[in-house]
Image 1 (cartoon, one colour):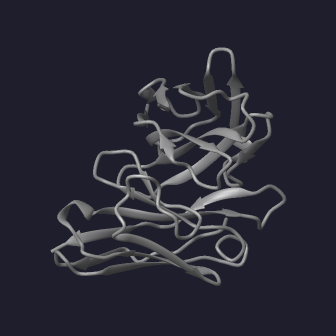
Image 2: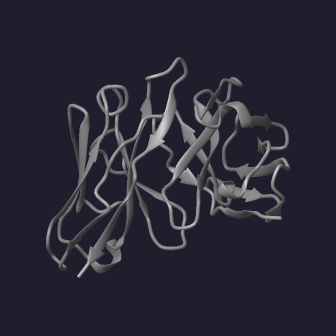
Length: 119
Length: 112
């Protein structure tokens, strides 16, 4: 059974750096074709894909956020870390961890973690 | 950045058929497969259609997907109250040097 769980701060001040961790189980990020990434959703708004890291360390980022995002992995600890620099109140929302395996879709999602950016 | 457009809402009575459209571009729907996600209030999205028209295990066959050119559709037949949710189309986009994934604007399905 694949599980993903997001963790990190619930409140971040504007201009600070946000760091979120996705802890996963039920698969290995060393298996060919596997990718773990992030999606966010501002309150009452649509889903927004942020980025993805693959088993081979290839990464894909949202073009509009690429300059502010970094996704890294620690395969031994089974976790993926999202770093977002210079946050703003518009970055407030629920951040979901997602997983794929040799697919163009994301069948596995974490429950999400709500992050509020406010002074 | 590329946008995939959906109608804000769609509605139907129990038992009816509801169809949701998703309009993209040659760079996303036009050349890549489409996925559909269902999001019930307060929960994480759930994949209901992948690769244009395939259903993951456990998804009722009331859900069906289709694609033509740069547009796609999700149909829910025999609408049930538990189908009331937000639905998002999604696809990879190849318009830039590095592919990226894009979600549609979302459609709220209301069961009258």
